[in-house]
Length: 124
Image (tube, rainbow, N blue to C red; front, side, top):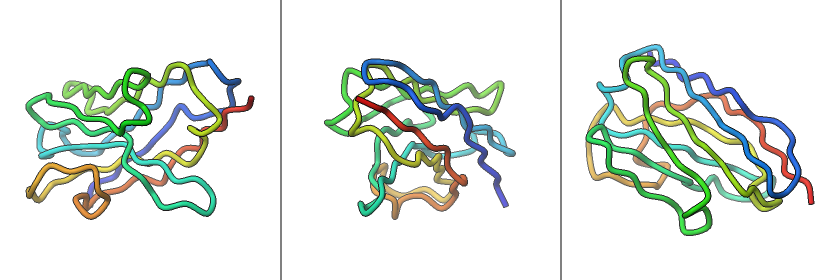
């Protein structure tokens, strides 16, 4: 069973930055794609950003231009650099990985491995 462990969450003021990390117990270049999701209280878990093993990326419209997803296959770690944070970015952030293939997606159904989450709180 693959283990994904997130870190880097915290509390910041609006306009600030955070970098999330996700350490994988397996080789990240074994995954077809990886992603970050977030879930706010009372809301559905939504895809934030995803990266394929060939390096292509895509983002939710709400974070384009502010967030950057990247992957270090030497350290087996996925990152999410979050800049110009807004209160609406608050929530639990989850790392996810697809190890079985299928269409590249930002929908949660496309991922079969999940971390436990790290909390991000942005105050106004």
